[in-house]
Length: 248
Image (cartoon, rainbow, N blue to C red; front, side, top):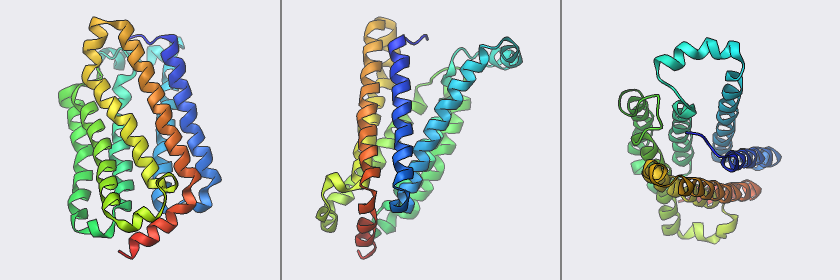
């Protein structure tokens, strides 16, 4: 599947925007709570994976390196970089799982053990699906849906508990880093969920609509990253929120 120039350019802009998140997080590092540091690490890994994929593609343009990887690419019938998407899925399930496990209220503590076990099983399920169901040589249909649903469910659970906790409402939503991060995650993963469900059908019936949808997805990702940047900017409010949560 070849990407258009505009799609590649937007992907680069998204990658740069994620890099800006790391810069802002470093500037605000003195104000970062343990939870926000986990999210900063999550963003850092996204950037690292993106750079690794870009480097891999560029390296394959060198004939000797291409010959070195050719047996591997041929054996697994790999035609694009979608076989590396599992790295994004594992980063989501592990790092976001740890992040939300750390910010759930103490009133939610009775369910934390079940949730933690859930966090452990999701990466294992994704690995099994990757090797034995979706396959390593194609984007797959199951793992993208599992990943999107996982990344939507956790912030929704947080927002629901946030809404029910009166002390949380004392901090304006635009200054609540956890609220901002949750909204950003819901935005980009809700569209990703729709994107993965309709990707193959759209591409087969109308390639131009596929490119348009890909561009819209990238723009929504940029909006989500704006929420991430805002969350790190207001990082100093996180300790206040954590202190209120610890007294519940």
